[in-house]
Image (tube, rainbow over all chains, first blue to last red; front, side):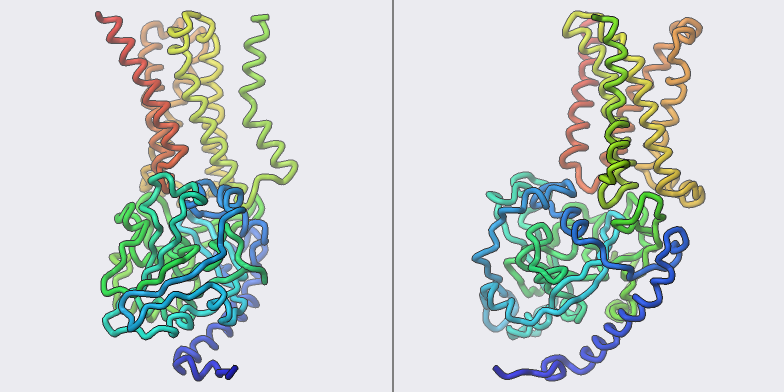
Amino acid sequence: MKKFKHSEITPEKIYKKRRSFIKSMGWGLGAFTLNSVPLINVKASNLNEPTSYEDITTYNNYYEFGTGKGDPHRRAKNFTTKPWAVKIEGEIEKSLELPIEEILTIKSEERILKLRCVEGWSMVIPWLGFSLSKLLNKVQIKSTAKFVEFETVYNPDEMVGQRYPVLNWPYIEGLRIDEAMHPLTTVVTGLYGKPLPNQNGAPLRIFIPWKYGFKSAKSIVKIRLTKNMPNTAWKNASPREYGFYSNVNPEVDHPRWSQATERVIGESILAPRIKTLMFNGYGDEVAHLYSGMDLKKNY
Amino acid sequence: MKNYFKPAVFLLSLWPIYIIVYQLIYNKLGPEPVDRIINHFGEWTLIFVLLTLSMSPLKKITNSLEWIKFRRMLGLFAFFYASIHMLSYVGLDYRFDFEPLIDDVLKKKFIFIGFSAWLLLIPLAITSSDKMVRILKKNWQKLHRLVYIISIFGVLHFIWLSKTIFFKPLIFLIILIILLLFRINLKKLNLS
């Protein structure tokens, strides 16, 4: 098999940005360990130690398996993830159905990224994955494609939550195409060096670290390139509260609760909330995507 | 036998405390311990408010006065758990940092309504003794009708803080509506 260099398949600009991102991750980890003592890290703290495997895999919002945080862990045990295929369709030259085995041949790397939930808590997760752009490069995208839509599997037999009208099933999420092509937008295949657990979105999910967690759709079966902005699940349920962009933004509160601070999962009962950072701390990498946009209006 | 009822209900009503103490000691509060404590006592407050509201319908249904004997105790437990709920929010979550707290109370409707419900519980707790019943006479009953507003505030508080009404907030809402409907029907029956 011919081996490509990164620079051959990635535009140089993005490639360089990716390098600087990895470097900044190192800086983040080094600089913030000094502040990781509880009680004094109220001001800073971004990329701390990874959250424990147990917390990451037992504290989940995955309404397909129930609205309780412990439901996905209990109920997803026997969820069928094989056989699995992901269909890429819409504004592309030729639709493509990829078996999961083929997708997994794309090399995954460890990406330690922070998850900020819209409810006001955060985790640091050592994901395994690769940039979504690598997957999308397998198809020829037409110039009419402006958005990318992700569809979660609809399987009410195994996903008990889908038997109730909690959300409009199947779960739909989406990104603008430039957001989707950003190297930080990750196709997740595992965590902590292991295959992705069912409750975290097996066999394949996306993860967008600068957006609230619900933007990162799980157990994806369809990726559709579209002309129009997708009608995403939470926006559909409550458009006033959940916007299409849903970038982490401490200055734009959820209409019912504050987004200025967050609680770090796994911290002791005496640990304080920490300040939420703009774009969840990934502003250097992604702020340019929104230059000139009013983020209060485009929440 | 009946002499043991009240102490037994008292000890059973401490159940939420036993659970939290056990989970604290054995480190079983989970990944978000502060949230867990606040939610735990919040939910138990609502349960005790609804239990308190169940006593007079139970009296009618079973034709037994026994139930009313527990009403005051259950009501005071509701106030007790509401106070722990509120204090753990103020102390554990906001660490007595009053500036963002006041901001929250005024700007976030679910906190405003929850805090109001707790404030409204205070006069009811203060006037719960036999002596106060005698002093206030008819006004006592009027005053204690506040519990209907408190219960509605409490359930609204739960609905507004939840991302979706499914399923716990919805269950509380349905039970509350049933309990309140009992009141309306009873009044109509009395009129006719």
